[in-house]
Image (cartoon, rainbow, N blue to C red; front, side, top):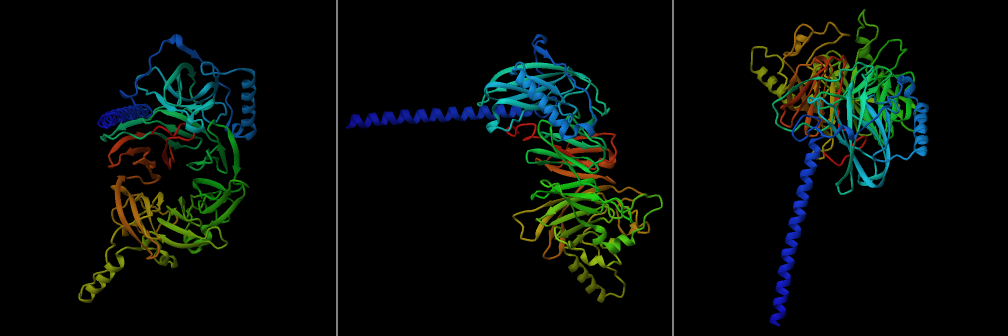
Length: 589
């Protein structure tokens, strides 16, 4: 019996030691995998560092590519027929030839929708994933490295179709392809080269960059800048990595819709483009003109800020329309001319102005399924409109300074500043005991003037009827359709005669039930008269100083990471996009 117990004890000890060893092995394996993930992620930051060295290879290993295709105008390439024709060409080539990892099918900018891209196709004998690096012979230009996204489970497949972006114009670009098995083991690598020509747009291939004092790691992604004829994507070192051509002036936004990219290409047209660059669909908004912002409402429609040309009043930037993504039907939801008739009639068009920009809606945010918040730069007011899908949409309330609405019936629509009523009552009580006219109580806080961007944020922590609202307060007073307004009623704001010290990002707590708003936080930012905006991105913040021709990224403690300078006009928005789940794989962060 004792002998049996001893055997059991020894066996148990062996099992414990074995399990401990296995646990330690699995732990070390997990730690090594994590370290490998960090190293790979560091290579995707597009900066010069020890973690992202240049790749060494013999020139004899390099296979040159020479198939830069003819250029077509955006009017041609944004036609679905053109895209379909290019797809058929590729299908014919795939049937005639066998393309593998070492001898793939390459086509420069196949569909014409990304002027710094290549189409890549091949097959493999087993399920694998693909990573690539673009390298040039310039020590100051970092490699552009990403995991390609194929849309299959665990991002492994045997048939591979990709759009590679990140090429540097006017240089020989080396493309290093890496093949990995499902476990992440490197199976093979090959090197190709292509001489990339200059861009017809003459876009600035390198922005000026100022490096800040933050020691935090900069976020992964590309800065998206919109101009009149192109959408440009720049990396963290300021190098141009993608150029998307446009037909003309459009809104400054891109939305991912059902695994595709939706964006405007002209005043009255949008397109839906897949991850390979093929035009899947094209949408017209007819007589309307888009101009800055839109959103997807989650129910199959895009809500678009628009101008309706041909109106007797020549009023612009005052209308909201709906575009149905299935039927392509366009519906006018409302015009602010109808909701603020008296204010519109009170406005005066200047003699020099060809159009009547009396409200200048510049940003839209959705609240619930049937409401929107609209930012009006001209009126320095944020307007909540409800029941927008009904025949009678209505203004529920407005957020702004009372002085703007003084002498109008609309003043009663303004939310009260939290604590203002108590301050007024206290001032009134003191007035009763004073022979001196104390005047009105001071504002408990100053809200905003000339705001150019808003961001709605719901929170499960807040009671029903409350939400947070972030506002880019330009702090610049200009009212072109009311030149007589006295801006001296506000202190510390900028005007055409003097600059303010700062613009601000403000965080309000909106209480719809109490009909109040409170200033929760206030962040000083560089004074930006017009076209300022912010984006909260991966614990960082991207600021766009449009009228200063700059944008910057700040860390989680508001310390500068990097600031970029450009020479473009009318840059209303700069957003950072990592393009993961579209061009690149989501798995590595």
